[in-house]
Length: 117
Image (cartoon, rainbow, N blue to C red; front, side):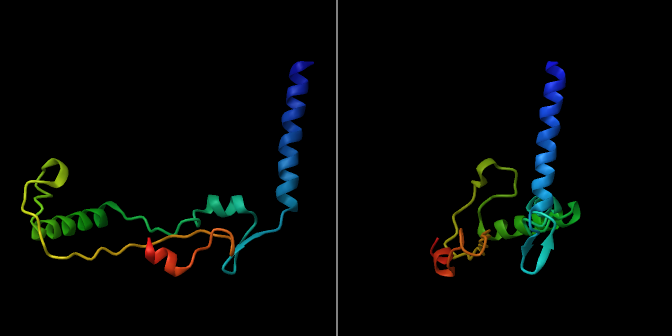
């Protein structure tokens, strides 16, 4: 009897979730529509960060090593912590990108707030 009751409760839970998802409106962002918010998350569209392959990663690593060598940091020479070189007084500009996920109102921040941080 206990096993039958457990199976029945599990089945009811699965059916309730399916009915809720079936009756839910589609999830839409910037004109693109998914059947549900879960389908959106599972599609990988949640974060638009592009993944790089091994070749591109190696190219980026080489460029970073050359940049750090020009800065005199000693990094890229196998030293832990990036130390070992002279400090550079040359200003360096590092681009920073802010990824804000919001529903149109909740969680949205102004460009000024993003820039300030």
